[in-house]
Image 1 (cartoon, rainbow, N blue to C red):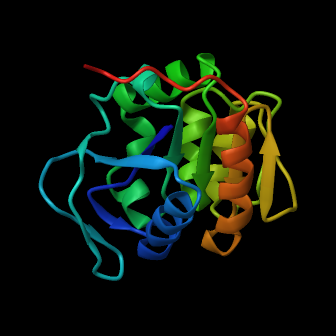
Image 2 (image 1 turned 180 degrees about the horizontal axis):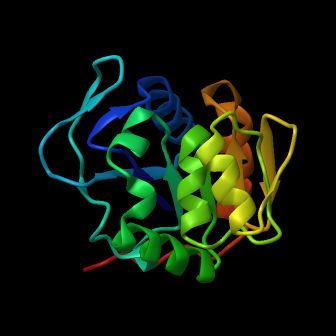
Length: 180
């Protein structure tokens, strides 16, 4: 089982990524860090991460799920407007692969047009609220939500809940094929 963890090139939330990696490792779930360049990426608090591949070029069918990490880089790099990324997320969702997002990364789900009728975790960001409404999603008043193959958390404080629900979804479907 393998998950694509997508981060911005700069200013991803270090704590979200480190918790995701730790919790996935504990559950024996492999992952690849994907970003938009092969150079080192720098977190909001200075963590350095070397991506395993490009988030705008990966093949969704070779991953069992996708996890989107939050942070100021989502907005600064306008990842919610990156058409190759949005298309890959939509393909993964249509292929019944679970998708998880934290904080302002939820707006990427809205722009990928996969939130219609989906209940999402509460968000503070007005732009995210606007986009979720525009694409007919529903923002709950809860910090964590799991609905129709999508798991969301308002921030990294709910990572244990997010990963537990994400794991349950991952294990309930056939494992993705691996490239040769």
